[in-house]
Image 1 (cartoon, helix red, strand yellow):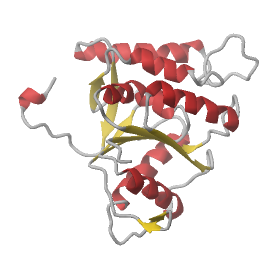
Image 2 (image 1 turned 30 degrees about the vertical axis):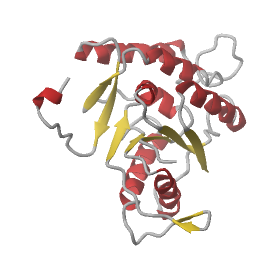
Image 3 (image 1 turned 120 degrees about the vertical axis):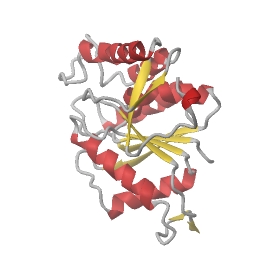
Length: 238
């Protein structure tokens, strides 16, 4: 299956938190979208890898993505090296996405910035014909996504562009809440974490509202780029 967009996160729930509404909107426009998780989030303060596996499946159904895969890299300890790059290259060549969405360039959690650089490097290397990969004993064709965008996570980074996601924030919130082991639950006996507070859960909505306010819409999500964004003409701007 060829994907239009592949959203990649270091942990299950990264995609939902960072760009869940954008994913939902693109799917509503007829795009084929998939999610790739690099780790199972086994070092998370709350829950377990097995619980998060199930939560990720439920969140994928809510968003309506075509596929969701997990490379099961070591949470907290994966590195940007040839071994890890090749595994991501295999997925990129398998699904041939036009656009890749990935972790924030800079963020509180070290896996986010590591994942960001790792995925960006893999997207470039995936286009080199002399790098050979195989899938199911078949040699894969080289493929390089046309664009790589980085969603914003914990840190309040100034976006390079924003997407109007008015009408899709409820789907995002439902997908985020599918990770009930991770986020605010006053009845939970689990240890508290930076993302388990009510303030964090509320921040998902108020950040989207604030970005929407700045562009004159109800809700928006922000992204960063590595290269200049080009527009055909001024009429193409919102």
